Length: 217
Image (tube, rainbow, N blue to C red; front, side, top):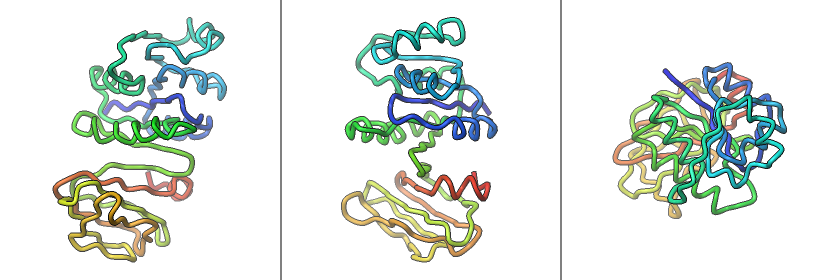
């Protein structure tokens, strides 16, 4: 299965985070325009740099000119991250991890969270931000966990129903519409958490450092 990492122009990931996912098979690195500045800063060479190229610095562009494939797409009806995802989908990638998609711009952060849902039917997208790891889910799943792990669950549609087994605060066909009710900082009481989701997409947010420590990804 083809997998890629997409580095956006938000807060830069560390090189260790990139290396961790690279070792997990996400070994094609795509930078969304100014995300290449972050890659340059942490010493990572992307396979592709894609976007309208209005955010990448001239020095970074020059540095990667002979090291990466640079694709300029000038259209303005989608973001640079969306351009990268469309490229990945066209090239047959089935999974992507978004890095650097949060930062000082709240509008960009919200947009990138929405992108996870927008492209859900075309490519499986995970999102890592700081110490959080986000997975979108719309069906039944068994999550490998450890007792005491913090797991938060968010939904968006009142018709979406969630049932859980293995969480301290049990969900039984619960509705968690955004802005009304949520399951923030729930706790695993088992080494397996079973979720049953119907009629919509939910976000499951976990502690990325905890996941790395216990090899839960």
